[in-house]
Length: 80
Image (cartoon, rainbow, N blue to C red; front, side):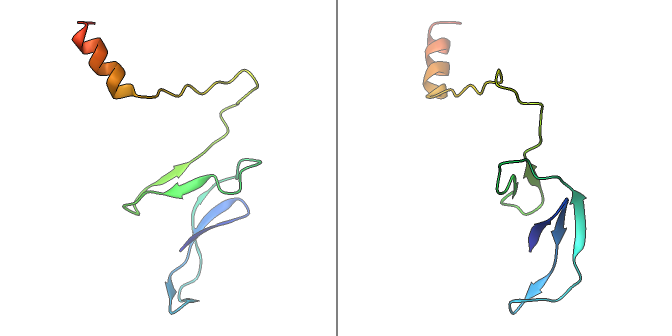
């Protein structure tokens, strides 16, 4: 099991609903203010996705592209 403890991501082995190993620090990570959980484990269990503060300001933007494959197909058909 992986969990956040203050400023660290920790791991502990669980069996029959109980911890069977001492906690091990995986790496230091300060949670981003305002997010309940700003990290996730990849489906393969080998990697983490972590949100880090990148100096986001009110001027920061996120561009969402919808139907990206349709747009790519149209561009390819037009010879762009």
